[in-house]
Length: 272
Image (cartoon, rainbow, N blue to C red; front, top):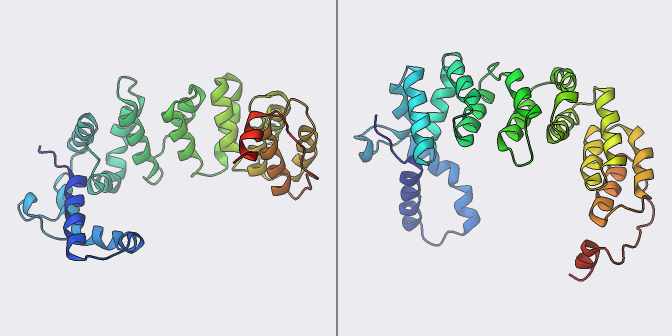
């Protein structure tokens, strides 16, 4: 099972193409990117013994073989070929159980687990919600896997909100913040709204974060607590700006701006 660096081969193709089209500006090259990619994928390649890069992985029909390829690319830190990614997604249900096991395998690298989760998210009806919720509830700040799970759930539907809020009390502090982030995209849960307001009033170091959640949630009732937060004396300048923006996003009027003399962020921005 040979491993080819598809990205490197494509960039070689791009360099050759650009040499044949001198004088193009950067934005013109960017506009041609998709055209170049399609041309490269569909042209017989000498380094593949005449096969087309876009069709190379169609030879693999067994999920185990595709999982070996996926793991090998991750192990060698070589960019995962788009045709391999597409082949795994195309096989869908056949590959899904293997990908779930990869995500569940705590001994696997975070990069491998994250890629497996992304693949599941691109398969129709294959995303394991409970597994994503488990990852979110156990996540800590800097945990990319929990953030990827949250991003995947944001692409589902509002039925996930009830499942998330059922697990809210048992989640880590960062997990709770992530749960509310997902819930802010769906205006359907009263407790989620209440927890956002609570965070705004009590989490003095990150009030701006909760202000942003309330803006995303989109409930005009939040204007009142946001106006109260705007007057808090321990509000730093950057959070103050986030609170003002949230009020305006919800149709409120934050009034005249306060002065923050002495606040390091305020002074730095004022002196730019």
